[in-house]
Image 1 (cartoon, helix red, strand yellow):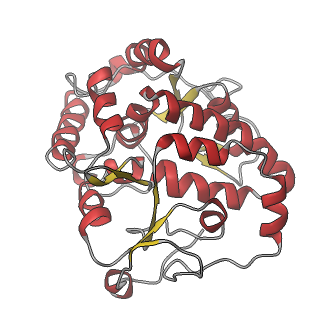
Image 2 (tube, one colour):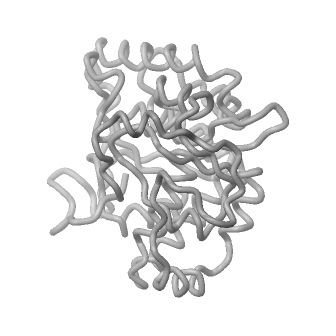
Length: 291
C-alpha cells in the first residue's frame, strides 16, 4: 500500500496519518456480494496450496462472514492475538507513512472493492487484496513480528537511499512468498493467495524459477508488477525469515551499492534451485514492467 512520488499532505477527509473511516455501513449489496464471490473462488483453490498459518488466520477472523469485513470487528480479534489492527486508507500512501503504520502494528488497507467485471485483475490493491490477502497472516505471531520489523527497517532504508532493495524484500516475501513445508511448497504471499490463477501458477506451472530464500539475492532481484512472477523465493519457515531479517541492514546496503541487479529470469551462482523454470510463460508475454 506504499508508493513514492507523493507531494503535499493527506487528501481531504483523511487524518494526518492518512487514515480514513472505513464507511462499512456504506457498502452496497453488490459490493458485499463481490466479496463473497471472491472469497468463495479463492477457497476453491487454496486448501492444499496456502500455508496452514494463512488458513488458520481465515478461520480465526471469520473473514467470509456476510460480506466485506468490518475493520473494527477484525481489529478486535487481531489485537487479542498479535496486537495488530487494520486501518482504512484512501488507496496508496507515502512510504514513510506506510512504514510508520507497520512499525506501530497497524495494517493500512484500502476500503474500496473492485467491480464485478474486475474479479481477475485490479491494478491498485482493494479491500479484498489487502484484507483477505494480508490480514490472515497477521494472526501468526512470528509473521506479525516480521511485519513490524519491516516497518521499522523502512525508515532506515529511506535514510540510506536503499528503499528499492527493501521493497524487493516485501514483494518477494509479504506479497509473493512461498514456504517449504513437510507437505511441499505452500503459499503465504498476499499477492498470490488473493489471485485465483496465480495460486495455481506459482506452485504448479513449469515456467517460473523457484529459489531458496537468500536475503541479498532477493534484494538484487527486480520484480514485475504487471503479471505473474518469473521467480519465486522459498523460505524454510517463518522463524528463519524473521531471524535473518532482524539484523541491521547497514553492511548489506553497503554491499548492495556495488552489486548489479540479477535479471528476473536468471539463475545466479550460489542459488539453491528448487525448480528451474523454462520461462515459456514470460517469453510469451509483453516485456515486463520492472521495479
